[in-house]
Length: 220
Image (tube, rainbow, N blue to C red; front, side, top):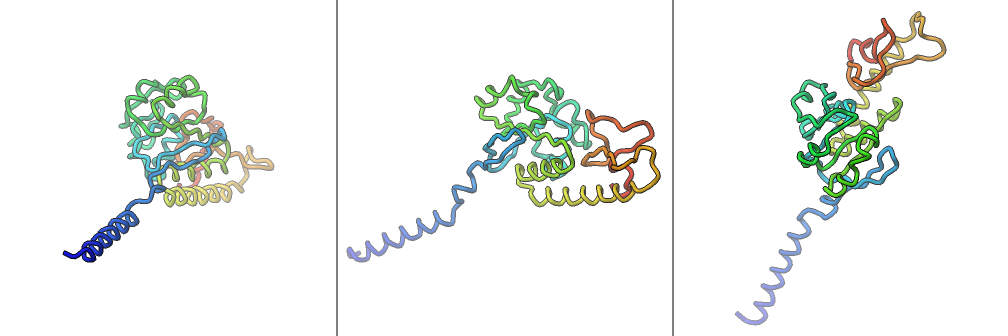
């Protein structure tokens, strides 16, 4: 081959290599995402979460609600809803999770409702490269935000939005049904909010004879 032919072949090979690099995964697709938790911490979330631990029943329920229950490798002994949660490895209760059990499960992220749950373990989690994210909704709007955030963490944004829309419809149904004679009703309506039609363990029970937010709606 002539020198010109060899140079032409080299250029063609270089062009094909450049095209393969351009068509390959972009660095940003595998880079951690920064999200802000309820403590105002900027947390680096893995690009794709495949292994997670939940330290609160309400968070476990939300993870399942957005379709990511199969990503949970550990939950507390109080996490018994939905039914599938009972089959997941237990790592202790909500107040005293076992850090050794958590580490052994090799989660990428631990979902926490209050920082006090793991305040003695944060250094150990950091050393193990395990992210912890605090989300502790205190009212209805924050519950919507928590569902949206957990949906984002697991890459289930659409499912998160659908869950929020469904919950808003159920809340609207309860508000409409609340316009009846009620000895507990004055100038406002007091409701106990859950993602499902079941009162979450650990939440305050409604007064005797009262119902949960969703149990009064037939479609809940």
